[in-house]
Length: 219
Image (cartoon, rainbow, N blue to C red):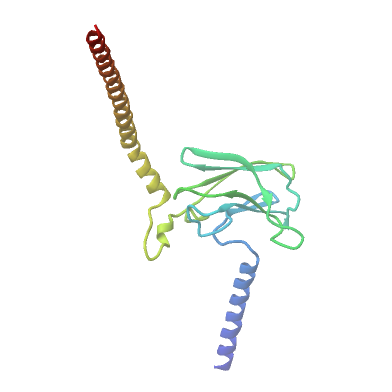
């Protein structure tokens, strides 16, 4: 019985050690690993889970022959694609230094504004090796962006996409109201002008009658 308990204790300690080592390694579970010869690319979002409307970024943890790449420079860029939309290519900046971060961690800042599937397309070179690799979010790779309604409490506010849709639907109505207001102002301007002309003509007629009457009285 003691041997069984001891074995269970050792097994638990081993599992806990492995989990802690993985957590301390700084590599998120929801990242895709890919080898290009002696180069390893670990790609995903900088912050996961990923929600729209919050600052995030493309994360690339880069190593060669098992050692972190510390001097990538500006040789590699990334494009981010969502449906028919694309941004980039943009540079990847180191997220580490002598006293902070994980060596080999490079990022490109991004705020996802729509929930759905994102593609990270890396182009350029790594240590002289040509790179043209695309990474697509999925259940088997890294997280896709989700709407904040999944974590909102106690009330769920409209998403940015919903607000944008409402603004687009209101567009024709706003234009119609503006046109009607413009026509009303033009009509009001014309009426006002005619009224002023009428007043001036009436005043002129009264003046002519007044001075004409005085002339006849003197005669």
